[in-house]
Structure formats: structure tokens, C-alpha cells
Length: 268
Length: 265
Image 1: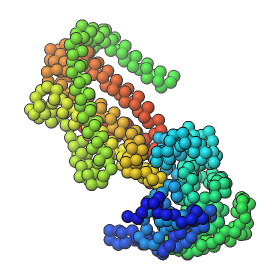
Image 2 (image 1 turned 60 degrees about the vertical axis):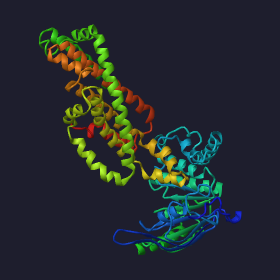
Image 3 (image 1 turned 60 degrees about the horizontal axis):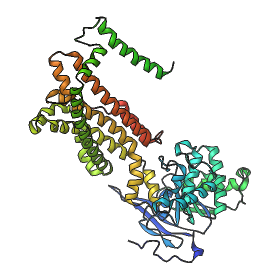
């Protein structure tokens, strides 16, 4: 077993939030044959960048994200977060936001946000204060006492984001967080996420199916091919920030989206 | 008129019919004694009924402890581990279809005709649905919730206490409702078959001497017992499971409550 993160000496603070993925491969052992899910995936993310992973269904982008979260181990290669490997989940370094319905339905919004703090025995008053701050950050001030079933889909995902941020990790991983939302809510949540990202300076890795969402949100888009998942393109989105709705119909936006689409069509 | 008022009216109507039909002679008193004569019969022999109720309650409480405790424990094991599930589930499901009451005479041979045989029979009777519901409750937990807990650094025991148990509570409770009701059935039926005490015994004894008012007084007592039990479970459900609207556990719960899981008697 690899040493625990908190006993591994971390590299200088400048590395906080940096992600390095090097020659990562993943093979699923099947009954009759092995399935290569990821093959020789390498990329780097500098601290504070907003990176989006796109690719056809089953290309292993979610698997890759689970590895960065320490929820799954790669078959080969190395992944470091803030300069150290991540052999198991470490909420101090990485917060994760899942697809919808990962909130605990029996807990109120604020109890959900406090959950990771409660796991490590943070005192109640401190927990509550941090949860209030996180809820305020995501624009849910005053909704703390509601249960998830009393919140809309967009509000639920705001709570999920607050939960991912409550321990103030330098890295936030998001696995298709808006996939279940309707188009309008999705656009609003994209803007909200960019606002939160700008306010906190986190490194964000965001997995999505939507090309528009990818280009709209990202500093960099990493495009993956169908199984076995490989990186086929790593492009920089030079559009100015803040991003606006008008950019969606611009030429720069369109050509970036077309470029990603051509990759995906070729590999699917 | 609202459904609730209508429901009350129906109940009141039935009670009135119970009093009127025998009194007017439309139904012979032997088949259906009037409500008032039933109540009077129960009142005059209140001591006897009280003693019988104490015996039955004791058997019900002990059986329920065994049935629910064992059912939840084994259901949790079977629900969370695939290997025992493959071994045990087919057997339990088949057993569920067997009318277990045929085994009761065997129990009396082993344990005598006192409370022990009733407790053994009713425990097994109520154990099966409790176990099946608990296993189902644990199996239907959304894997996303467990993954999310793990991503936040939850250990195995934290996942059990903070995710698995709260997520399974609604389904387990509805299993307890079915299981507990069957415990009452098991105790009363076994008392009626072969025994020397309890409400079931009283009903059976008064029936052999054609004393209908006393029979119906016993029936009323069992009825109240069942209603009180159901009300208690509903109260706990409301307390524990305010959140379950629209969750997967909530749907499983509905299926069980609506009688998709009813046993052969």
C-alpha cells in the first residue's frame, strides 16, 4: 500500500491544485477477455485552470475522473494531485461533484454540506459555519433547512457543489454534474459555476457530453476517443472571460466546437 | 364530501348495522350477536379477557423481538453480501410460499402447548417478510450515494452507520409492518389450534360451546390489537421517513405496503 497522503511530504505550495496524469492505462478484467478502457493517457493541468473532458459514451472519461478522485486505481501509469499520488479519496485535496441524486435524501441541505466535515469529527459550530459559507457561495443562502426533495434539480446541484467545496480542496472534479438538468437550468448553472470558479480559484476538471457546454466553460478541452480511450486533441479555448451567451453564435466558438465534433465523429 | 368523511361514515354505518341487523332478527344472534351484547359479554368477563390478553401480548412481544431482530440481522447480511444471497434467497422465497401453519402441530410436539410453541411459530412466521424487506432495502440503496460517501473519505463503518442504515430504514419499517402483523396472526392462530391460554384460545373455546357474544368479544380484542400495532408502526414511519417521497426506497416501500409481498397463510 502506498503511503497516506497526509504523511507524504507535499511539494511546495505552488503545486497545490496541479494535476499530472502520466501514461495512465486501465484494463477491466472480463470473464472471457480483458477490455482496455484507457490507453496511455497523459496530460497536465496547471493550478486554477478549468479543464473539460469530452468524448463519446464509454470512452473512459468518467473512469479517469474516478481515478483522479482516488475512487479507483489505474492499471498502469501515475496520477498526482498537488504533487502527490492519490491512492484513496482525500477530500482535503480533491472535492467531487457527481451527477444528480448523490445528495443524501434524509439529510437537509446544510447537513448534506456538513457531511464530509462530520465524517472527520469537526465540531458542530465550526461545521455549521463552514456549511453556511459554502451555501452562500453557491447562492443558496436561506435554503439550508430544506430536504433535497424540496429543492429543484439546479438547486440540488448547487448543494452538491457546496458539499464539494466545503473542505476547501484546491481541486474540484465534476462528473457530468448538469447532465440531468433541462437546457435553461443547465445554461444558468454553467454561468453560476464559472462565477464560483472565479471566486474560489479552484482547479476544475469537468466531464460532459455536451460540446457547447465544454467550449463555453473551458480554458482547455481534452478530447478523448472511443474505447480504448485515448487523448486525440488537447485544445486551448482563447475566448475572453467572462463568457457570454452571445459568444455561442460567434465564429470562434463555432470553429472550436466543430473541431471537437470532427474528432468525436471520427472515433465513434 | 371528502374521502375521509366518507370513510368514517362507512365505518359508522357498519357499526350501526352490526347493532341493528341482529336486533331486528334479520340475522340470528348465533351467527352475529349484536354489538351491545358482545360488549356486555366482554365486560362481564373482563378478568378472563384481561388475563388472556396479557398472555397473548407477552407472546406477541417476544415473537416480534425474535422475528424483527433476526429478520433485520439476517436481511442485512443477505442484502449486502452476494454469496449468502445466492445461497439463501431462493430457499427463503420458496419457504415464503409454504403455508407455515402446517408446521404448528410439529412445534407443539417439540415445545409443548404452552407459550413456547406459539412464540417459535409466530417468530418464524413474521421473520420471513422482515428479512426479505430488509434485504430488498439494502439492495435498492443507490450506489451513487455510497460512491459519494467514499469520495468524502467515509470509512466502511461510517458508510454503514451514516448511509446504509438511514437509506434502508423506510423499507425495513414497511417490512416490520407486514412481519409484525403476521406475528399477531401467528400467535392468535396457534392459540386457536392447540393451546391452554390466550385470546385465540378463548375464541376457540367459546365457539365450541356456541357462545357467540363471547367469541365476538375475543375477535374485537384481536382487532384492536392489530389496529394499535399498525398505528404504532405508522407513527414511527412518519417520524423516521419524512424524506422518502420519490426515492427508490420509497417505491420499494409502496410495493410491499400495497400487498405485492403477501404470504400464503
